[in-house]
Amino acid sequence: MPLKAEGMKKSKSFWMGVLSGAVEPLAAVLTLFAAGLVVPAMPCLLSFAAGAMIYVVVRELIPEMSVESRSGMGVMSFAAGFAVMMILDVALG
Image (tube, rainbow, N blue to C red; front, side, top):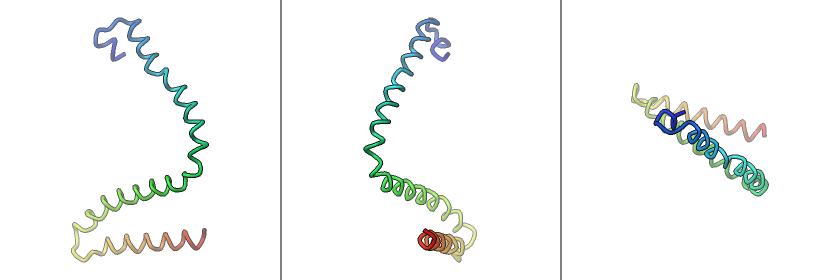
C-alpha cells in the first residue's frame, strides 16, 4: 500500500511486497538449524539479557528515587530488595 500510495503501479507494488517477505521462510529454516548450536550457550545469553534489563531498570529508577529526598532511602530499599530476591533465588533453587 505505501508503494501504491507513492505512485507505483498496483502489480509492481504487489510483487515488491511479495519479494520483501520471501526471505522469511529461508530465515526460519536457518534459525531452526542454528537453534541446536545455540542451546549450550543459552544460559550465558539469558544471563546477559537479564543483566542488561537490570541495568536499564536501575539506570531509570535510581535517579527517580534520588530526586525527592537526599537520604538515599529509595536506593537502599532497591538494593535491599534485590539482595533479598537473590538470596531467595539461591536458597529456593
